[in-house]
Amino acid sequence: MVKHTYQRGVEAEFLEAYEMYADALFRHCYYRVYDRERAKEVVQDTFMKTWEVVARGEEIRNFRAYLYRVARNLIIDEARRRKLRTETSLEDMREDSGFDPGEDKTRTLLDRMEGAEALKLLAKLSDEDQEVLMLRFVDELDPKEIAEMLEVTANVVSVRSHRALKRLREIMDEQKDA
Amino acid sequence: MHKRVRKLIKHLKSASMTTAEREHIREALFHHMEQHPVEEDALVRRMLQGGGTFRPEPKRQPIPLMRFAPALALVVLLAAGGGASYAAEGAVPGDLLYPVKIHVNESVRSVMVRKPEARAAWEAERMERRLKEAQKLAARGELDGEKSAQLSESVARQSEALALRINDIEANDRVAADEARVDAALTLATHNEVLSEIVAGSMMGESGSETEADMIIAAIQKTSESLAEVEEAVDVAAASLPTEDSEELAPREPPQEMVDAANRRYENAENTIASARLLLSENRENIGELVALQASRTLRAADEELHAGEADLELRLYAAATEHFTNALRLAMRANLLIEANLELSVEIEITHDGTAADGETTSEEEDATDNSAAPDATSGEGSDSSTTSDSDGEDPAADTETAA
Picture 1 (cartoon, rainbow over the protein chains, first blue to last red):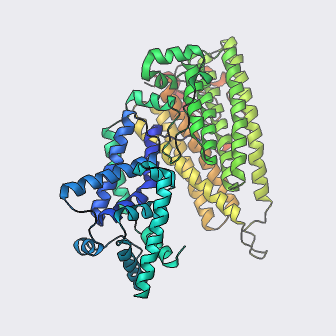
Picture 2 (picture 1 turned 30 degrees about the vertical axis):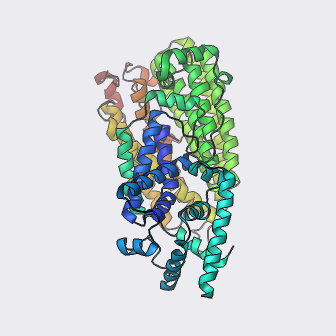
Picture 3 (picture 1 turned 45 degrees about the vertical axis):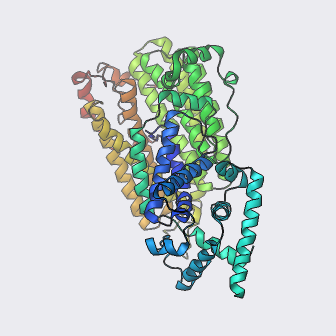
């Protein structure tokens, strides 16, 4: 078993972590900025910045939470710079950038239409609620991790996600009845 | 959960990057990492903090250093600063930093490695480390009784640990476990050969060191044999299945395991050949011309075996294919170790056709005198070696007195 791993442990591990988390991070970013290119940039910057921290030897306790936090901050900073309100409606975003989450082309048009419809409804939730729903149910982080990321307690996260889910259901039911 | 909510969530999850996009970013990231290398201090700090893997679980408690490092090593570590654990990597028994290598560096890695396959790979690597230390000492002529006892015991213990790890894999992936066993057996056998050659070449009749080295060679051989038994058992089991090439029987589908094993071995052989080729091309100038020649000849033989195996695969003769791939793997490992030994130990070693050593430093009489170098262990089939003409062997001791740089 003469393997030649010329990379030292840390670099290889870090790149493995990239493989593990990049996609989920992209998705998270995409649903914040609704711009594919921008989302990719954020992912790249996030990993690069995080690497610099690792290379300096600083401790990162919860790696995934750290990544999300860096990404979040990048997005928020940029939004502030651009003076964009983060509550831009979904329709506006879609018109600007061409809704392009990169989904599987084999899905039926109906599916995609339904999905787009559902997203519109999601947009009716507050920013906070949207975020926590994404993190909890799409990215499937557990409340403790989300708590670290958002810098609140795990309890707050649980309550928030529960409430957000309830609101989403209500909105969907409203629309159905309308 | 609400049906539409579930659908929404499913839809949201579908957003992802294409493989191309992901690769593109990875490349940029890699570049960035090269520009911002890890600071030396950072690595040691990481180790002392307890590894800090990039996992979502909260960090473990830092490993208390005192538990592993003898006080002396600790003092050395602190005094020498960040560079110590690096320097330790090259240590052999008897060196001041050797305890750091074992009790700090290796311990930390052991804790960090979790998945069964990775654990097995790590234990195999550890075993190789001990073998390489023996080779290094032998090359320096420093392999005395105490060290060789220490190392042979380590090798024995390591191979036990390795066997346990392989058993762990077996439950889920029988083919991977078998592959790991074969790999380990071949590794031991190849290292054994190299060690024998070093001993034969550098001892030059210094009786004291010879017996010590013999001890360790014997220990390795014993371990090697027990692993070889396992390999044999695997082969026997495979062979007892009806052969696919007998057309008289109703054509039966070969068991999936057999197919998987053949493919696995194929992959292993191919990767090892590629890795050896790379090593050769990167180090051509640093190893002797003869070694380079030897290595490429060996690799060519490995390639031939590989192609033969591929042909068998086409014909769905899986048992025969596996045998060819095993030979290819063996040859590739040998080439690899040849080059490595020359690079790391600054001793020219050639594993010639009949197993005797031709060391660039010895005179031509040495060639025939060595008995103990032809290690007759079950797994190294010298007969399968490519036809190495003896002409070149005769020439080298006279012509070549260089040692690898």
